[in-house]
Length: 124
Image 1 (cartoon, rainbow, N blue to C red):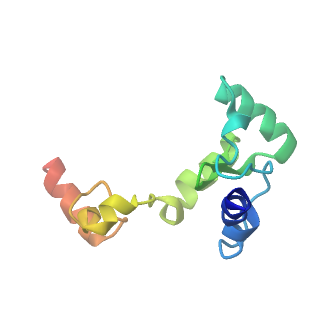
Image 2 (image 1 turned 90 degrees about the horizontal axis):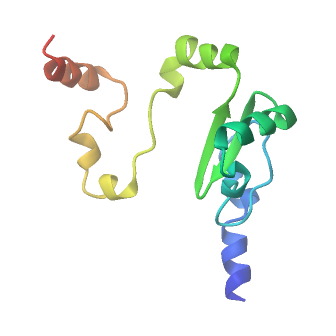
């Protein structure tokens, strides 16, 4: 019964219900996600997965949903043309619990506060 509960709580269908539309990807295993798909040579494994699922795919790395881009043209689109949509990173719960994420330039989202603190740190 305990194993069934863990599997049902970690099922991809349950997690992705509110996540919006994500690109296709391999079916993840419960708890570990697609970590086994990466193997000993992740760069080769990602190239093989791209042949099956396309240049943009979704991987579950443990509990973290990750969108992987394997095409140079798609990477240019994301990193240059749509950079503001993708520039923020996931903040670990341990930092968020005590608001440490608000005290460091590393964890701040791209904003006027981030730009001001960055300029002070760089000395521009």
